Length: 236
Image (cartoon, rainbow, N blue to C red):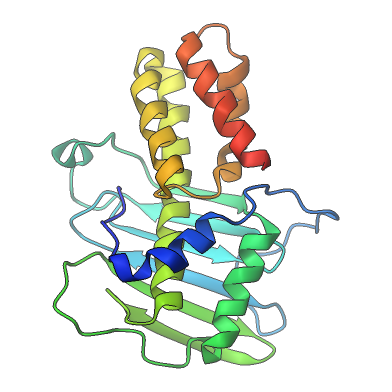
């Protein structure tokens, strides 16, 4: 899945999310928590659906410390028909930066925990339905949209899509390392370009595969170099 081209009116907010610290480390790592939301634990989640993409559906659950869970489903569209490598269903725990999570939860609070209308109903290209949800001690709420007039809401949706892109690129790199090492050069170049322009965010979420590539003498030097550059970005 490649994110759609975002409306220029939302670029400032999108850039603000992209500029957040990419480091996924917490000062005091919290114990693992269930990915299932509860009223006692604040949780923000996004559900994304676009039948024309592969994967066609994914969900991301985020906790205040940056921990969370990602799940995606392939759908019926062949990835190679849209110029991509097919990714199987993904179901894994993730760690995003605490600063990113803080901004997400602040945005939820600013918008009444998503108890408001998000959809603009403007005639714009279909980017995918994004449903933002919050549950916690303050209550719960959700709103769904293809495109929102509100810059914060649109920027939040775009940034979650960019995080999902990073996770999926990480899965592609894992598959290529195992089955087609020569294909790594093209894929990591794609990731590097996406990271530079904000289409891929929170590079730290795929630190594991990048460290493996950076240290693997059996892959091309170009791949190792790009992996090291991306790791440096994840530390800033």
